Amino acid sequence: MNVSQKYLPIINELKPFIYTYSDNLKNYNTQVLSDLKIFDPFNHEHKNFFKRIRTLDGLCFGGADMGMDPWVILDCAIMPGAIFGFGIESARASDEVLSLFSLTKEDVCFIPFSIFIAIPMGNKTHWFAHNLSSLNSRFTKPYKGLGLLTKLFGIKTLKIEKLIGATQWNNSSLYIHTKLSPLKVLNPKNPVHTHSNSFIYESVYDDNYLNSILEENTTLLDFDYEISSEDDSKISMLNEYVKDGKTITIVNTPIRDGAGLKLQIKESF
Ligand SMILES: CC(C)(COP(=O)(O)OP(=O)(O)OC[C@H]1O[C@@H](n2cnc3c(N)ncnc32)[C@H](O)[C@@H]1OP(=O)(O)O)[C@@H](O)C(=O)NCCC(=O)NCCS
Image 1 (spheres, helix red, strand yellow):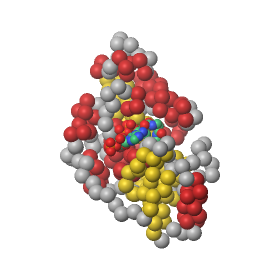
Image 2: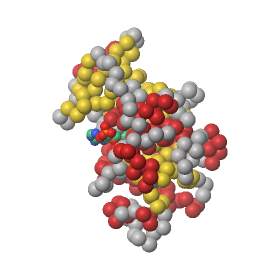
Image 3: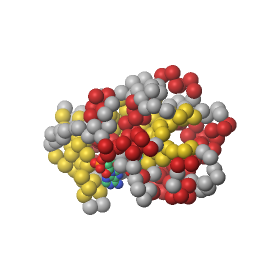
């Protein structure tokens, strides 16, 4: 696996981890990256790591009213699926990182910097993308591609071929989701999500393509038109198209457009 220079600090300086029910591990590929740290929800010694996952989740999602309660992390993430991420031993953490987690130099522990959570779905073919978080925006010196590589290596480790996820039309995570695959929009306007501008997408992954992303060796796809994440009437129109049986796919990465994003759409029947 060749990795572009841009992403090497993540591979060289951070450690991958997985937090899952131990019986799930036999179905995962724990050898994708060397030195994978394994956390177990039944192990009392791992309880404080669980608390640090909650701190990270609060830092990334608390403001969006989407922070997870402990039982949600256990029932809807660790037991049925897994949390995959990158982190660092506290001995190597900067003062900035220690302060984010309210730790001191005397605390000896592992600190999560990013998480990707996926859960297998009842249709037996797809996984659901439950969470993607990265602390990059809190760092003076961010790890370029931390969110991207967290999702990419989470997909490889959990052996995910098809993924369904929910996000908002203006969410910056779209820079990441669209890099990993085109997004087929299954439900352009979801009626029940906490945030009304949410849509549901499907991704199908190809391992060779994922490797080409790591090498930064991908090409742009053709598109039919662009829409703005702020244009609710266009999004309602896409909702009608999908109801009528049209396939709507977001291709390529978004372009920043004022407060929102400009997204490239490919249509087909
Ligand atoms: C969204 C999130 C996961 C991004 O993590 P990150 O580690 O900062 O992102 P990466 O460094 O991997 O960025 C990957 C690419 O996306 C781009 N990108 C990421 N966030 C961006 C932003 N806010 N504005 C513009 N570009 C952005 C990066 O520039 C990079 O593109 P490039 O390689 O072409 O330069 C992180 O900001 C986060 O945790 N947000 C809060 C929680 C959330 O909304 N999660 C998504 C739920 S669906």
